[in-house]
Image 1 (cartoon, rainbow, N blue to C red):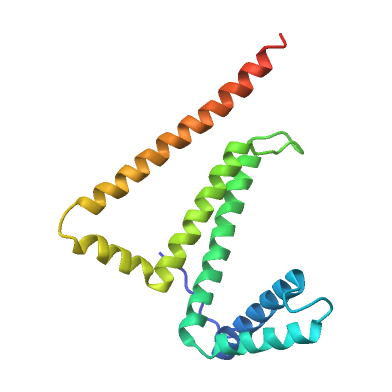
Image 2 (cartoon, one colour; image 1 turned 135 degrees about the horizontal axis):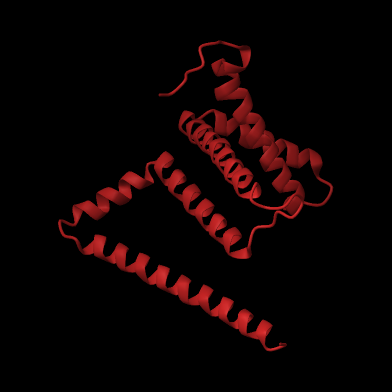
Length: 177
């Protein structure tokens, strides 16, 4: 059962949700990237601000772009809450102040996050439907078999690579005894 919010605030108005907030997000991100990269020159804050303003205004002029941004930001917020809950649960198993995830877990979470963002971007932009239609239009199971073979080869390669690293680090640690 989904609990729905029934109240109306000024922040839930379309002006803020579909206009001001996406504009501020895009403007800030583009400005930060331009400042960090110095593509338009060093110390050109005004030019960076004008370019950021133009890009921010162009983005909010297209409803599809705003829709994708809103969906991705919502995905980000929900995913971060899920990760937070996971980290709290895992952290409760550690002694206070000694919480540290193994490098394998960090890589696994990073890989899952990348995969989730890629799939979300494909779904929100319509790319996922295009891929599924392309796979289904072949009329055979060729593409399905290829996808499964790639997944299996990737999983085996991951196990072999991760297994090789842990075995070599384990043997070097035992050589000192």
